Image (tube, rainbow, N blue to C red; front, side, top):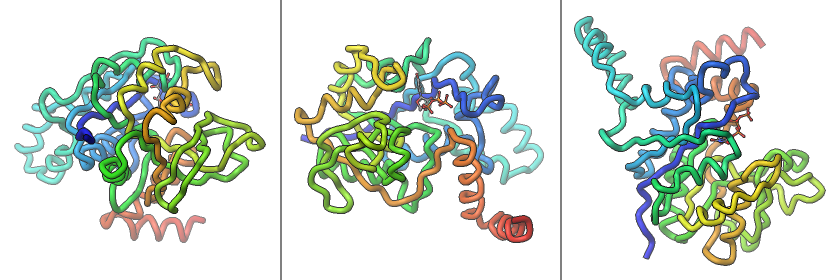
Length: 289
Ligand code: UTP
């Protein structure tokens, strides 16, 4: 029986070194794309995929992330009093259901695998999604919803994948693939950040996963991998052969917002999707570039 997907883990305990000094006192996931912080895009995408329970894996200096999803009584009352209905309505997506958001701390950033292991009590015996908020996906159907639909067909583990330039495999988790129907691919192996000459393909994992709880027992081994970090990819690789494991070539475009260029590209792409801004942005780009 395929269990319903209700839980999502959002790891946000990284140091965000690529975005210093912006991330010195502010969490990377609070950086806005147009007018919404990255973390809110992730929570809204998860909700659209049927997620009901959220676990943020946080670290020091990340309290604003939790505040962001709280009710802001004073602000709301003031906006109401002043008749600022549009501003008031814009806050709607920024509140989670009472009791649906919890946090756990990853005291030391030992790596993404370790961050997920920190959420083990929340995960329990259930399948769960992972969203890395700095990977932002512009898509007609939200990326996690595409993954969830595929999960209900295949069962087991499934990760969102995309082709990357072959010379960039050393930045990503890379798949060794078996059967491939052009959309869904069978995963035969996973390697974190292989050098291009060692890469089994150029199909890379992006920050959207549906995993089975058994991955936790492999992460608990605390084995260090690429960059001397406890890698999620290595834990997932241990599941191959034990459980179904697929990659899904999602439809949409991913922006790596942990990277300066990716972040700027996302600003432009998302602004161009906004009816209230598209024309002004297009005119600016035409005249400026
Ligand atoms: P990144 O590789 O982007 O690392 O992590 P980072 O620290 O956030 O950023 P840079 O590379 O220093 O600029 C991918 C995701 O994993 C989380 C991050 O918060 C991000 O969502 N992460 C990473 C943790 O939660 N804990 C870790 O120990 C490492």
